[in-house]
Image 1 (spheres, rainbow, N blue to C red):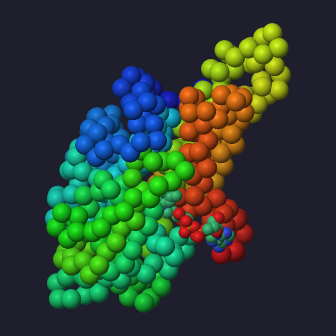
Image 2 (image 1 turned 45 degrees about the vertical axis):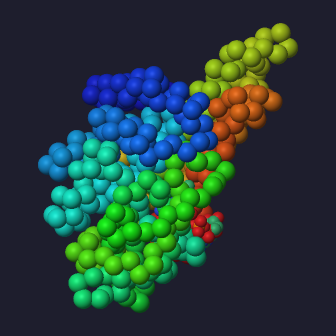
Image 3 (image 1 turned 135 degrees about the vertical axis):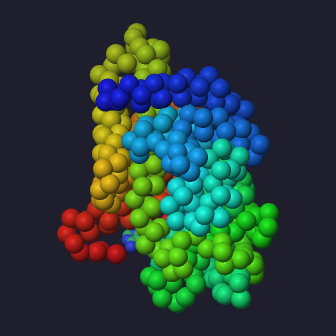
Amino acid sequence: MGKVLQTQEQAMAVDSLRRYLAAEVDPLFAREYRDRFVPREVMAGLMRRLSEFGLVSGAVSERAGGLGLDWLTSLMLFEEVAACSVDLSVPVLINSFGAYLLEQVASPELRERYLPGLVAGDTFVSMGISEADVGSNVMEVRTRARRDGNHWVISGEKTWISNGAYSDFLICLCRTSDDPRGGLTQILIDLHEHGYEVRGIDKIAFNSQSTAQIFLDDVRVPVSNTVGEEGGALKRTLSHFEKSRAFVAAQSLGLGRRALEEAVAYARERRQHGKVIAGHQLIAAMLAEMATQVDAARLLVHRAAQLFDAGQGAEMEAAMAKYFACEMAVTVARQAVQIHGGNGVTRDYLVEKLAREAIVCPIPEGTTQIKQLIIARALTGVAAF
Ligand SMILES: Cc1cc2nc3c(=O)[nH]c(=O)nc-3n(C[C@H](O)[C@H](O)[C@H](O)COP(=O)(O)OP(=O)(O)OC[C@H]3O[C@@H](n4cnc5c(N)ncnc54)[C@H](O)[C@@H]3O)c2cc1C
């Protein structure tokens, strides 16, 4: 990996996190939980430790009990988690944005009740946007919340919900009126008080953490559990995507970097035609291309983070980072498999898993095609969707 400009504080934070992950977490995901579901107590233990390093806690201000890290530092730390395990990066990402949302817009009562657990790593949140028929177009959300006195009565089905089986509460995007733009509201549904049914989804990868369907059947929730103002959730969800997309980009960046590291190590060891394969020009060219792609993705991620830190809008820049980094991960992971030859498609080598994981990356948080549409809209002022 090329040099990265870091302050002394950032370098120390990244270094100590990297050492912890290599010593204690990497072996866990490489062996015991390779493609196996990590039970909630184990995942919570990891989240507690990561919180000490600034993951999740970094997304919340010191005033609200967090570490209040800047976006760039948070993304540097997040890249390390993803380079160790994309499975582990998912609850970090979802809890971070759940915590961020609660601090930004929830009532003081909801904040006091739900934020400390997330920051400490004791509890998990899910963010419920997607539905069976609602993916790329958030405006079409159908899960309905109707008023009944001081309660919402919520019915519907959410799907692809990360943290689903871990979550203590769900921040659910609901339709509260028929106005396509002004009719969406976020409502906090507490699993332990209001209940919801969770069913896991088995996937090509990302199976060590939870992705689930969530079923809501006339769930009664107090109106005081509304997160932010009624009808204001579409605008907020789209603006949160700007930030969360940079994290999904950093997830792919970590994955691509790990594939490169594995390929470099293998190319230095494996001998064919009388020398290590790193000494064959076509392998050297592939490694050079992979490293350049990984670093280009990092520069896009860091640029988006710097714009966030400067308080500037970065919709196009975050979309570019997500688009490029996710497609980079697919290409680089495939090249890493190629460099491993036959060994690369066996479960004895990590690159097999990385290649499966990479295929997933261009889908969540807005697909590659949606990213292209956002970038083109910013360039031309014409929406092609
Ligand atoms: C591992 C994983 C975790 C996830 N976690 C969450 C979560 O925690 N919470 C949550 O709410 N959701 C989550 N999602 C859902 C994710 O956000 C959606 O899968 C994504 O938005 C795409 O929606 P879709 O799957 O319905 O695809 P669709 O929207 O049906 O798209 C299908 C294809 O059509 C393309 N397409 C769609 N519209 C257009 C257009 N206008 N022009 C050109 N092409 C188009 C897409 O790019 C895609 O290739 C997760 C998904 C995955 C895979």
